[in-house]
Every structure is written in structure tokens, then in C-alpha cells.
Image 1 (tube, rainbow, N blue to C red):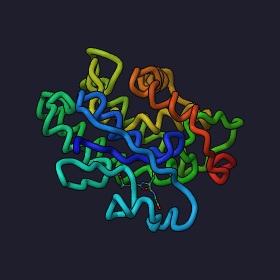
Image 2 (cartoon, protein in one colour; image 1 turned 180 degrees about the vertical axis):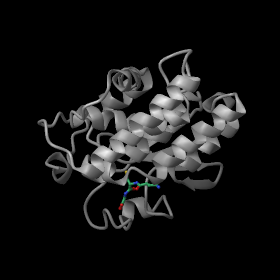
Image 3 (cartoon, helix red, strand yellow; image 1 turned 120 degrees about the vertical axis):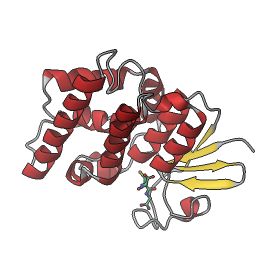
Image 4 (cartoon, rainbow, N blue to C red; image 1 turned 90 degrees about the vertical axis):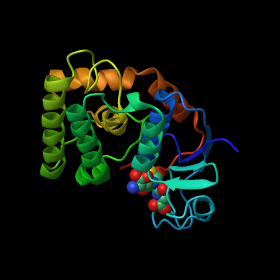
Length: 220
Ligand SMILES: N[C@@H](CCC(=O)N[C@@H](CS)C(=O)NCC(=O)O)C(=O)O
């Protein structure tokens, strides 16, 4: 069996999008298998269809050579051990890229819970709470610092080639678009680059075609 990446609904599963981008950018051959999220056990990590392939009860999960690797960041690191260009070449830049991906992986809870990933939705303008605005301010500061230090060669955080850090922020870019979160011109240029990236466009087309919705997220 080759590499199989199990993902959740393309429209809603922000964690699934991240390693899917990384494997695609890395040119790693893999098959995508979609598990429709929702129903009994969902949000408790107890969905039988997910537990059948993932010991954590979550997607994404990678099956490779008899190994089962759950977690978006672990899958990204697995890919980076095969394809060096997935992190920046310079060790200092690489350390900052890893820190940024880790910050995304473990943080920004208000933004994640109050603006759930919903790629095809365009919500009405709304007022955001201080907790969401604080996450947005931190993201803008982080992106601005990385872009000004390392991004001179192109539109991404570390220049002309997207890295794992950019993959980790791509779902955030969709949240800015879905919920019309105000952004500085500099931030907007970065978000536009992520949303125009060809692999993301392919995922987005899948999200648009997906026949099943999750009404609880469509009204959030
Ligand atoms: N830390 C995990 C989080 C994965 C996660 O929460 N995935 C969600 C879908 S986006 C899930 O599988 N939820 C199933 C459930 O909560 O029952 C990662 O980075 O992969």
C-alpha cells in the first residue's frame, strides 16, 4: 500500500488541509481518502469511522508502510524528512518557521473556535470580540515580522516557495475571507497569495463540490 492520507470534509476540516498542502507541495505521492465528519461521536473523538483508521479519533492521519501517523504537524515533519524544501534552508529561518507552525498548532483558540473553517462560505460582516481581535493582532505581527526578515524573495513568509508554516496558516487565510476579518494591506497581500496558491485552489474546488454540509458550522 502506498501513502494514504485520511482527511475530513474539505470545506470544514482545517487540520486536514494543512498536511494535504504539505504533501502536495513536496511532490510526495499519496492517495486522499475522505471521511465525512459529523454524527455520533463527532467532536468527542469517538466517531467509529475515524477510530477505525486513527487511534486519536481525529483526522488527518497518514498511513504509510504499515505505520499510522496521526496529527497534522507530525505528518508535515514526516514529509519534511523526505523533502528538505518544505522548511526554509537557513537554520535560523527554519527555527522561526517551526515556531510559527507550532504557535498555530497550539494557539489562536479564540479565532479557531469563533470563526470556524468554512471555505466556501461568505458570512455577513460582523463585530469581533476582544479575544478574536487579539489573535488577529498577534497573527499580523508574526506574519509582518517573518515577511520583513525572511520574505523578500516572494509572497510567502520565507520568500518565493511556500513552506510548512504557510500551510499551517492557509486555513486562517480562508477564515479572514469567510468572516471578512479586516486586515492591513500588507497582511492582505499575504492572504491573497495563500488563497491563490494552485494546490489550495484544487482543495477549494473540492470543498465547493462537496455535497454534504454541517449546518452547525454554516450558521456559526
Ligand atoms: N491536533 C490534531 C487535531 C485534529 C483534529 O482536531 N481534527 C478534527 C477535524 S478538523 C477531528 O478529527 N475531529 C473529530 C472529532 O473531534 O470527533 C492535528 O493537528 O491533526
